[in-house]
View (tube, rainbow, N blue to C red):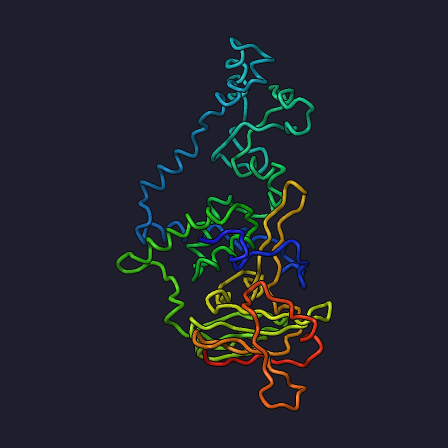
Amino acid sequence: MYSNSPEDPHFVDEATPLDATVDIAPETGFGLHDGSWSEDQWRELIVSFVENDLASWRELAALILGHLNPSQTGTSLASSEGFKRRYGKGNTMRIVMDWAYAQTGRCEDCDSRLELQADHVEGRELFDDPLEADYIENMTLRCRRCNVVRRPSHELGGQTFLTAESALMWILLVIKPRTFLDFVRLCRIYGMTMADVRMQEAWAMAHWLSRNDPPLYGIEDDENTSYDLLQWPTGTITRTDSGAAIPDHAERLYQNVRGDHSFAFLVIGEDKRKKLFNYPVSWIAFSTYDLGEMPPYALAVRYTPPDRKNGRAQRVTPMPPASLEMVSHAMVAPNEKIMLERTDSLLVGDRTAVPVVNHNGKLLPAKLQTYDLRVVVERI
């Protein structure tokens, strides 16, 4: 289970400023390429659900019929304390239903007929007394998505095409992330700010489909597979299948690296201080997905959740060594330990053991900051 803790590869300690805080794709912002899909692409996706026995035509029709039903559009208003206070219990339902029948039956913002809800034109947060917002002239119809994205808690509302509920499955079934961590990264890039537990629940579908006969999903076997590590012009490190063609603008840094190894590297930050990192290969993002206008290495990110109490939005930032000067690196097997070797010493093998270091990195002590160092390994 992954959570926002120091053991999570996505955790960013707010007390430690990031070395690089540029957006992973500033020209496109959050979201993937579902917003630009054609009707034919959506039709093909639905047909694939039926062909792969994810759903039958009857089940899909029943689902649409259920979402066309504007359930509780009237009763949700009639049960509101603000409406009852303004109109009285005996009149509220009649007033609300007269209003409902007079609507067009389409979302005010996107024209959809699905999942319609009664929504305030001027939100309750704009009133000193939130119940004062409950009057019939202040109501309109919006679909669930357009209703939710207007809430102040959804700071990325409206920047993506699908609701989080739908996007979780679109990402899973269309982009097909190979690991749970890549699934989380895709969800964060899409703009989702909910807890990882929502993604854990959605990832169950990957497990279910992987046990289908024949399998409809492939979950990566990191421990028993080998990969190539690539480096991109930004300094970003990703992984791909061993022996696969090298994408444009990338260089193969390591070949046939086992998934149970880790990648240790030493960088010089913007503050000119040396910092050591160690990433398990299983934490390194793949660069094998279709991410639309985003670069192939866009998933090499870490995530800071929003701090709504202090008004800070979420951050999705590149994982080191992106945008940093990497001065040395090494692959570390399970039976090896990381060492730092002085390259400016006359003593052969002048090495220093380092304390446990992980994906968050460790700033080297002042003494080691003055030396020229490289990362090496020794057998345990």
